[in-house]
Amino acid sequence: MRRLLSIEFTKLWSARYFRVLLILWIVAFLSIPIGFKIVLYWLETQSGQSLDALGLKFTQLPVFDFSEIWHNLAYVYKMLSIFMAFVVVVSVTNEIDYRTLRQNVIDGLSRKEWLLSKWYLVLALATAATLLVLVLGLVAGLTSSTEVSLEAIFSNIGFLGAYWIHVVLFLMLSLLFALLLRRSGLTIALLIFWMYIFEPITIGILRYHELDFVSNIFPVEATHRLIPWVIPHLAMFPGLDHIPTDALIIAFVYLVLVMGLSWRIVQKRDL
Amino acid sequence: MSVLLETQQLTKNFGRIRAVHELNLHIAEGMVFGMLGPNGSGKTTTLGMLLGVTNPTSGSFSWFGEKTNHEARKKVGAILERPIFYPYMSARKNLEVVCLIKEISKSRIDEVLKTVGLLERKNDAFKTYSLGMKQRLAIASALLCDPRIMILDEPTNGLDPQGIADIRELIRHIASDGKTIVLASHLLDEVQKVCTDFCVLGKGKLLYTGNVKRDLESDHSFELEGESSDAIENALKDFPFIVSKEKAGEKWVVKTEERINAAELNKAFFEKGIVLSHLSSGHKSLEEKFLRILNENNAQAT
Image (cartoon, rainbow over all chains, first blue to last red; front, side, top):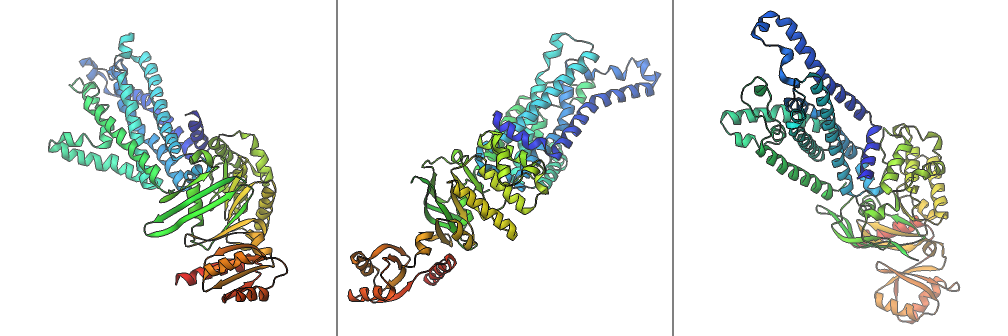
């Protein structure tokens, strides 16, 4: 595992796209909570006394409160997964495009090891992102939360696990797309089309016809359902405040399917 | 001599096209083995199968007498078609990846770069290299694991005369170190100058295998053909002056003792009651031989 990871990261560190995406991702990562706080302060100064009279303060919205913070952060950060997906897609399609996958195999890497090195990349990215969310959550929570008991801090930390699974599944899905389509531009375009246009519209139509059980098994939706919508919850309306079990099962089935298919493609294809 | 590489009935079909058909090859230690064949004769497909990038349709092969092949590939230095590296990475970084893959120490990187004359450019990105430099880096990469056997597929393709001369010199230098080399090329002159043994492929089939010295340098070799191949074989067994005999397609290639010339050979057959329909002597150029083998085969096919 160490050898395959160091092969993968030797390839990545010198690549400009990787450094650019990494910096973009970190900037986006940090600017979300900071930007959010600034916006809240701005809203509060703008709203003036009318809301004060009601006893509602924007800065006191329980966004960064333990234990909701884990759910909130996981929900927000799953939108940044696309950056990591780009890294995975470009690293796979580049190797097909440059034919370095073929050269790696000639040099003595097995096809299995090559795919494993990409899987390790997925796991490394997911783990790094989850750790970053953890650190950020602790910092934001400890500085803003009204309650800081150990119980409050850790009671909803399961959402971090859900976030990790979401990232792993989403990146594995992107990896499969990349293996099938072979071109980075095409893969990224299709991924964006699928995520932001095809799935939302189809799911919207299905939901309208109350066919939720069908819309729930769409792949990207499956990764998103691991971390339910937070807004109703924040606004004190009833919403899901836990990880849906069926979403976990669907995600697990997808993971097995997607990884199995990638494995088959890499083994069978002439390079 | 131990056999380093062996194929048994190796076959690859692309759809209905037979790219390689039931190929049997034996490469022994110390050989510099030339693979000849026109474009599309299956050379690269064959090497692709041996190197794990093309899945064989049927048949098998073994490296160093073992069947497992990705571990074996770590001990082989190979270039297939054109040099392939990460374009954005320097020569040194690229070779570091190869070291990690082959599980060898990085200490030889500078040494092999020096061998191919790229040491001064080792920190420049691969994409800034000229074709000749890329080809030399590929050879450096193949040398990295200090392999017992090297596979070189068209190593002089697309190079200028100076580049070709450099690569040829490099191959000679490597061969003189006692390494076994498999060289696929259409530059027959090159194969003749560098190789000890050779084979000819045509349309995926093995048409001929032979030894360069025995086949080309002897003035006392003859090629003959007659009505009955078996009768010729029996007669050859009886003749005391035959040094070696080999069947190539329908023809026999024989080497005789020095005193025998074509007329005497013909006479000897005639006395046995065999009339030869074809008798020719002393082919010295590989090119001639190569074209002859191909033509014969085309004639047979039609």
